[in-house]
Each structure stands twice: as structure tokens, then as C-alpha cells.
Image (cartoon, rainbow, N blue to C red; front, side, top):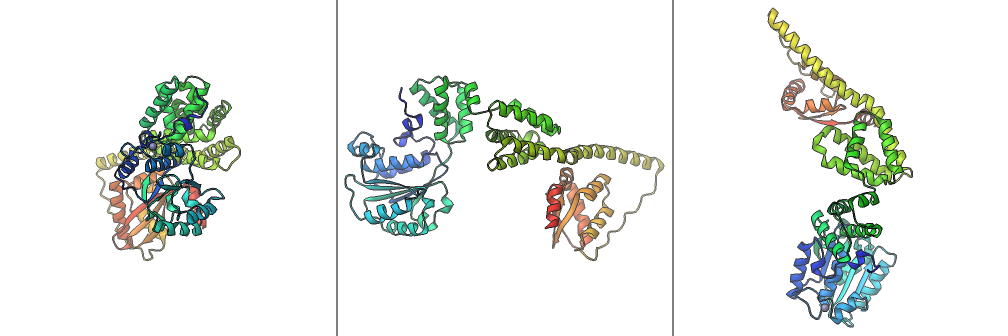
Length: 470
Ligand SMILES: [Zn+2]
């Protein structure tokens, strides 16, 4: 068995072995087969999706002496010269390197006028092209406007939005996409079979999942795990520091119940067992994504919490402390937030029962109907307190009244639009109920003297306080 990394050994060598980018390779292959290749191509998309490999294949295909319907043979003198890096006619420039900009001037501007020395076509591959300076782009643009027939430019970038429009418009652009999991698994299986590596199907699926559509990463993981022995699920999970879904669910349960100490103990033991805590935060987010609809409220909270943890992880030297800190903050909020949320639902039920009782009594005693207070227009609409007070005066449901009184503020009134801020999830949910919204908008309209609608934004108390302060 060769000791060359699998990523190199199995990097694509012709259009057929580029995985998951058929929408690109089929088009270019047809163009080349019909002698209709473009002068300038632009490849963009995430790293590791095959942009540079495909550029090299295009270079071979354009020069192959014995192509199969546009696909390079990988055996003729030209294909071999390119594969072995023995020709001056294929120039690869990494614009991200310090010499990249100089190379554009020296290699391209100065040498483009000369015919290829050995091959049919000169091909310039410029990687991370968005890194070029303005001057280099301008110089490049000049050549690209009227390229000699024997020159092809292939530009590649992970950040298309940083490439000047003038350059983009000169190229045929192709977007490289992340590869679907089943295609990755299939490719890994092919490589494993060819290398005599024993695998478990679950293990390959786990690798595909963690690789997030980046084929190069998937092959790299397969290589690294196979060095340790058979590629089993357990081995992959421990190598990648993966944690079982049940453990993640248990951790979220602890947090939901406000058991911050338990949650911190759990994460501490994960770290002790070698789990990478940044990777773990990503896993939790993937779990939250998959289970979002199971419990929208809880998952929304968890998405926010672990998003913050992951974000901070990049800048903070003590990963465990990041978890402790955010869990701790949750505990503080917990007393106010989660507890309050639970209390609210209890209060809601109690209030509803009371209202029922009152209504029964009313029926029995046939109490006179209390006449509804007429709604009066508030003189100064900019006086949000007055508007809110007027609203409270006319809300019939005591639950809603309580919620609005405590947890809802008027942020702005702008013509027909009232922006409300809710610092409590239940208040928000109630305000957005269709019936309630209709009733409240009716009252608001009477108060301000013309038709209005409203929108609700949810914030934590702290965010709201910060907003008030400036
Ligand atoms: Zn060939």
C-alpha cells in the first residue's frame, strides 16, 4: 500500500472522477469536445470542493492529444507533462501568497504575448483570485479583454463577492457546491474498497456528515481513521470527538431544567474524555437544527446559547470556561426567564379558571351587563405611556392585560405601524395570535384615531435596557 495521503492519491484526474459537480464538468467537457471552450473561466465556491483540481483537468483536456469526447486521456505526452508539472505552459499562481501579485505582472502580462512553448494552449490558473490588488486586477483585465487564441484563464475563488464585476463579466462562471452525503459515502466506499480498508456503513455516513459536503475533508478523515485500524463507527466517533445524540439530548434537558451545575459537569467530563468542545458546540447546533420542531421554544433558546458559545470559542483560550460562563448566565436568566415562563403558564390556567367561575356567578345572579368604556382618542400619540395605559383600560382578558402591562412596550408609532417589544415569549405568542391581534389593533386604531397594525419584536430584558440606554 502506498504511503501517499489518500487525498492526493484519489484527487480527481479527469472529468469523470470529479464528484458532485456534474453541472460544471458536463458543460465544460462538451465545450472542449466541440472546440468551443471559453477563453476565461471563473470557479467559485467553498474550499475543498474541487475548484483547483477541475482547473488542472481543464488544462489537460485543452491540451490532450487523444481526448475522449473532451475528457483528458492522462496518458499522452501532454497529459503527462501537465500531471508531472513539467511544462511552462501551465502556470499556477496563488494570489493569496506574497508573490502572487508580482507573478501576475511577470508571468501574465509579460509572457502572454508569446506562443506556448510545448503545448497547444497556455493555461493560467489563478487561485484565490480575490486577493489580487486593484492594480493587478486592472492589468489582468487588460489581457482578458483581448486574449490571444492560445491562452485560457481559469480563476478560482472562495469569495466571489470580492472579485470585481469587470472581471466576473469577462468570464463564464461556475459555482462549485458542497457534495451530497450519499455521493460522499459512495466515493469513500470506492476508495476504501480499492485500498482494502474495512468499513462500517454508519462510520462512512458519520464522516460524510462531519465533512459538511467537503469531499477533501471526508477523504482526509477516512485516511486518518484507517491508519488506526478498521473504519468502525466507534473509532470514527472517538477520532472526531463525536458525542451520541442521547448525550446531547440529556445536556439540553439539564439546561432546560435549569440544572446548570449538572450541565457544567457533563461538559467537563466530555472535555476530559478528549472531545473537542468547539466541535461539540457545532454538533449541538446540528442536533438543534434536526430537532427544531420537537420544541420550538427550547430549541430557539438552545440555538442562541450554543451559537454564542461557538462564536466566542474562536477568541477565548479556555473553551470550558466559555461554556461555564454562558451556562451560568442562563442560570441567572433562568430564574427570571425559564421560571417566569413556567409561572406564566400556571398563572394563565389559574386566571382562566377564575374567569370561568366569575362568569358562572354572573349567569346565576344575572348581573347587569357592564357597559363597555368608550375608547377615547389619545391627544398625544407620541406619549407612548398614555397610549399603553389607554390600551390596558380596554383589554378585556385579564391574562393578556397582565402580560401587556408587564412585558410589552411600545417602541415606536409611525403612521399606521406600531412597533412593539415583548420581553417575554408568552406575551409575544399571545400578541401574534390572529384573534388577539385583530382585537388589539382595533383598540389601537381607536386610540390613535386611524387604522394601525403592529409588529412584535422579542428581546431579553437586558437587550431592552441596553436599547433604552442608547
Ligand atoms: Zn492526453
